[in-house]
Length: 114
Length: 114
View 1 (cartoon, rainbow over the protein chains, first blue to last red):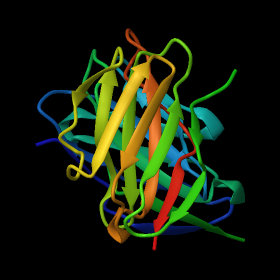
View 2: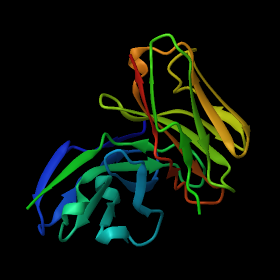
View 3: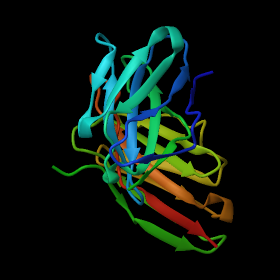
View 4: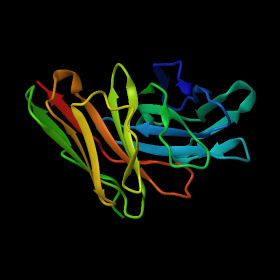
């Protein structure tokens, strides 16, 4: 069965510190991989995606993620966190080549302190 | 450029009442997804359509839930009768064939059933 695990429910970091959010997936083949962000009361916004090729992908707002096939992981990183990054972050997987539903992790809530 | 539009944004109703949630996908998108978000279960798929045709409704909790997509620009999710356990945020998302399975989310409808 397809599944996504985000082991950290809640993370607190200081403004200016680096950030890494973990994501592991279980899928029959290499899927498309996504990170979405959700601010309170808002919908989900795409941060970045991995389709193929370079395993380090760049996204919006200074985020990047690295796909590691051997570890079935797609961790999200940011070198310096801003207070406006406080939100909920979701990792998701989708089937390659088709418009099919995404499978989401449970999310990681990020708090940023001064 | 309008994104996915959902209405209402908030709905408070009493147990037993009928609830109808509405979604307008992005123009030109031919796949539409209904997801439900709860604290306990996270984001889970309810049903999705390709070219207005329901493809997978296995996530619909029970017969009280129904969804329609009468045309490419409109979809409804109906709950009749509603129950307190239906309280959740319901998201609609759309995507386009030939894309990379990237889904664009609406702002969601927060449903509270008293």
